[in-house]
Image (cartoon, rainbow, N blue to C red; front, side, top):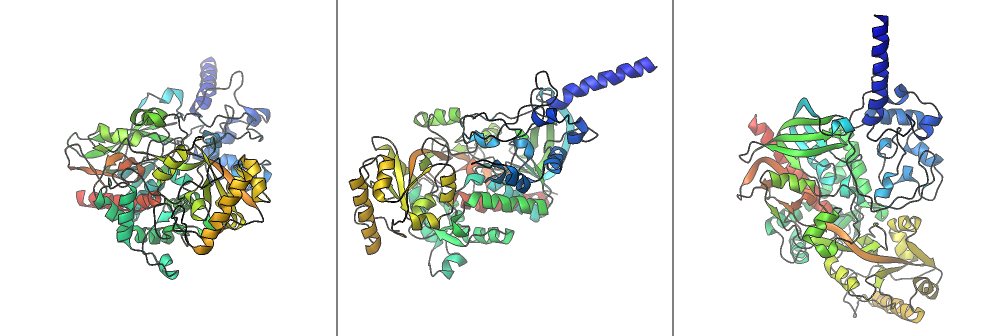
Length: 598
């Protein structure tokens, strides 16, 4: 009996040595059970995993124990020395395990978008490629194992970006039991990267400043920006619910008090946090906080691999592949697809727009289009998939988007001859085309000290090494490699236009600030793919439309996964409006449908 017990104990120990690192989501370290500091400090399994040695898809206990041992993000930010501090980034207070793996070498999540050479304890100093493709991490034995586990919810939401959070919060507040699923190790989606703000017409903040905006004008300009290819009924819903969308965000705790103008718009309609801070990180923090207050069931590392239906146009739930839990089913009366667009999917972009395949993308690595494919597979109609937006100002060879609000704050675009060549606040498609028409297919943003101080995001671009700085226009021209005389003449002409409040050369309507010292700045920019206007067709109730032209029962969608709202070109600032307006509609209608179906 003792021998049998000893053998069983040895077998159990061996199984744990294999299972725990595998469940951690990576290959076991060669020749070692642990990696990095954990190996050096002889950390025991239970120190991280607890006595049960089980790991949920959110890696809750692991992250709690990480912070218990190493401290929270604020503590780590203070300890982390370096030009780039990943513990004080726009991603916010995320899971430690998004970067740190324990059993394999840690990798910086930042470098799925950037190429930082970060020398941080337990991280190594390898410089990652910013073109690295995201692959869903799943424990090896869990990839194909079908679990007998079945859960139930009133509403399942696919994708925890802006529209997913808004839909989930709205459905929850309307009385539904909600599960919000995210395939990535962190929430936020592309909304996390949103730099500008939310467009809204006739808001209390505009009225306080004496601005008289009209939703009808927002409809007109949105349709014009989309080349009249938008669904006009969806655009009306967008515009006439935009002021309520801002009030909704403020009710959650967001700051939308600052106003600026975006391209293709005749008034200051873009609402953002005071000081010009990026709207995306601010909103995602607000959403995360509100989800936590409501005890919302939010699951990361949870990829939806199938939307379930009865074959008659009615959804019945989803099948999920969890990083640690494997395949399982969630039965639901309603499903909301908020899985985002596909601008980070080189192959899909290349299929619809071959000329854009090799251009850089400003998107987060999870924007690969599965939400569209899953919906189409069960009969959803898909429209405008070939309409892919190129944003005019991405930082040189990087994936960093230089916010449209920099131009809205007064910056000008000049070419490599040192001359202006376009109205900086035209629509994105026209501005991009103008830059690509230049021999170098790139340009420079040029601005002065007052413009820099008006937009706090520029300080972030300085930290990232994207901004050149000089004490004079001539010195700046030398750093840019352009003619000093030409640049001086361009800046002088623009400043005269500012003084006269009239731009005779390019008819720019908004001239908020002159380009003056004592410091002058430039940012090298190139167009890159940014937004996919096509996707799942919806109606004004955010119901998904089937290939037969009828609304699919219990199936809703919102945000970039949908098509029709923006036509063939999206105006800057309308994406966040889209996520909030249609996210609220989808969440409320899904909850209402669930109540009626009971």
